[in-house]
Image (cartoon, rainbow, N blue to C red):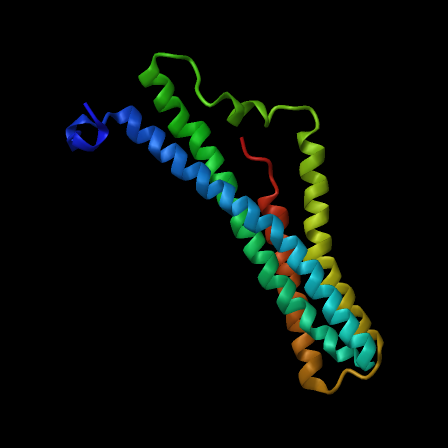
Length: 183
């Protein structure tokens, strides 16, 4: 029977689960691309802000770094968490249900296999270091240069810079908290 003439009752649970898998993997792939590009965007923006501050001779321009890095870092973190959540759902819910329907022990072996190599923990640690460097240490360095320049531009900007430092510290804490390898 051609697919177009099937009734909704002809759709099996297995087909629905495979369709869900396909949609989830497409979303995961899109989020991975978006997340990874956020690092390049961050590097570009950081370079532009630093170049502008140096050319203008105005350290106060470095105050643009923390808000930009916090927003991009938070977006990066949220996408990374959703990527991991999709993987966990496929491994913990969708895969076992499909394996049961198919009468096999496992399904989607790659979803588990790629997570079991000996270097996974070290890769996660290095990735955390890169994330902290790009989204937290760079804006904190900018704030340090601003504070060290002596002319902070008044109490308002100084208070603003402290609030920015707290926001960056909050992002760093969230990045560390989310960096725990999930099962």
